[in-house]
Length: 236
Image (cartoon, rainbow, N blue to C red):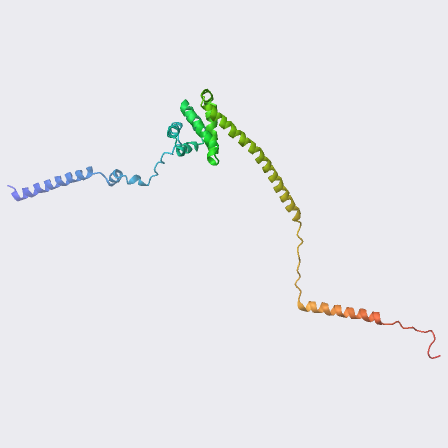
């Protein structure tokens, strides 16, 4: 009979090998390092993120809501915020959504702004033009709009009259400026260059001595009296 201790050892070896296989199988079922990193979103951290959606410009519906709130509450600051929207399509669509009562309120507000000065006046002109073009029938049918239209006409006439004077002043200033530029260009003639010769002191002294000698010879030549020679010799 085989020894029981030997049989026990064989059984332990077999059980150990089976456990090793089972542990290996368990390890193979575990996620790899790459899968773990992917689950933590660390692998794609260096990838370029998709750009966020661009900010969309305000639509006519949103501006219409703000404009209606400004007209009903008589909020001048909110009205200016709406008038600063200078997109032609937004202006046209926003004005088209106004009801008749809001159109009259907008007209009165724009006419009061027309009497002021500054950047807000330039912003109000496209809105006034769109309101007159799209709701002219509504404006004319309202008796309360006659006073507003009369005020608008007087403001337009006053600004047109000052515009003619401003154009005359602008043309006069342009002529004066052009004459000043032409006069300045005539005075700017060709500049003659000045040439400076640097001479030595010795050469200057020699030139001075030569000039003195030449002056002395000229003076001596002037003082010499002519000698008169007779034809008769003294030996006769």
